[in-house]
Length: 257
Length: 257
DNA sequence: TCCTTTCATTCCATAATACGGAATGATGTT
DNA sequence: AACATCATTCCGTATTATGGAATGAAAGGA
Image (cartoon, rainbow over all chains, first blue to last red; front, side):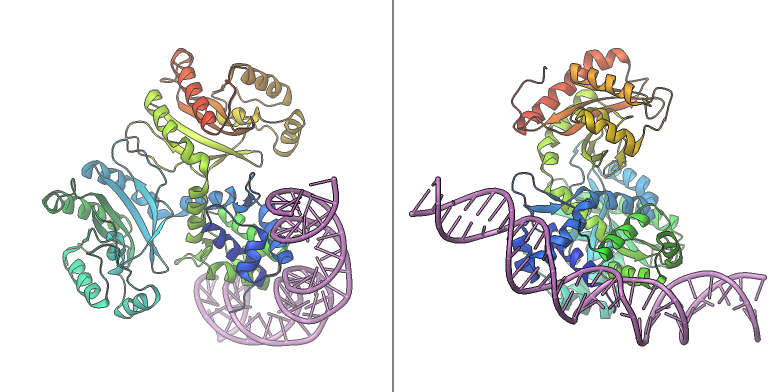
């Protein structure tokens, strides 16, 4: 577990600033992290010279810098699931005429790595990079079918099941049952479990070894995403695209169980 | 100039990996950076525990991790030019029916921070986060009008003027003249200077102090972006939106010189 | 205007921390 | 099986990061 203290501290600073939309002062960081002001100052300088941090021109507060974005853009460029899935996402968004997402799993959370909006609803990047909990989102639950039973309990301990709406899953029993359903039917429904008024359908993507590596989803307001439309129109199209992507990744079995 | 060595080295590792789409081995990093393998190993561990680096499952090579994306998403959330300009970009893309970009300046380069495509040309994020040189792009030249003469020379020294096409500006004289034109007319044209077949028109965004803080552009293939269309249709619309955004940021003078 | 407070910044002596060389372990190649 | 090429661990050394104190700058109050 040998770690480099100063690097860890720098990362903590970055992560702290990520949660402070208005930035923070040296004094604040010093108090918050229990380090001397001189230490914080020196670390901030280092990060600032490289552009990972910048100072707000008005307030003088320190906040995240452009270089963070540059790294992310390279990260996305290196992600091959993204390029593999791109065409399928486009197709899916055309078929479904709703917003479509691609997510991967990271540390018991779903991370949105791509998004295609139907028509010209041109809100961009609104979600890419964002994280979501697993128990209350379509993609989250789809990703969960790759977990072992022991991992479910880990998840319950580490993250818990916060209640967002009156349909949110709030305990392990419900989750187990739900995962059973999803495995049986090959897709997951988010029945307004995270946000009232939003229904979502999601499906897992498997790689050559049958491992769950990603998930795709279609989401929209319940007015448009009626139960009948989901069942008759959307289930087929999302399953089709999830299978196609899985096949591109080398998955060979039919997704029918 | 006091800097933290280990942090600088970590950042260098991240930046090196950003340019290695397939990742790199410890040996390779060690050779490339002139550091002991044990040092690289320790730094990598630290970055990996936090998720900024991950190992390719097949090759074992180290590559950028998801956490980079997470930071970027927070960075973008904090950037207010982006939210300020969003509606105007949409409008512009509708008026122009071509792809529209928003860029900021960082370290003598243009960084794309938002993009709106017209219609359903759903290639997304293809540019956001990317960097471009200043001398050969519309947005770059638009951003350059905020430079002092001394900074032009700096730019020339630091970056040079690589030639991409036969219209690329390749020396300081040409650049000075071009900047004069842009200041006079309030917009910049990229006449296939970076990529053959792509014509682009760009305009600077100014803040309350009259400082150039960003630039917007319309780009497309010369077939559609004819000179007459640019002059009669696009110049007016891009100037209108750039002025509106500048006004939102507190800029008060008319953009007419 | 001057005093007070609250920041950020610089300086410096201390030792804790990061360092790299060498040894070991793991993998894969001929 | 021996070799080559990786990654990983260990450990003594001194370089490097540290935090306290002193200084400087800026903002707010009287």
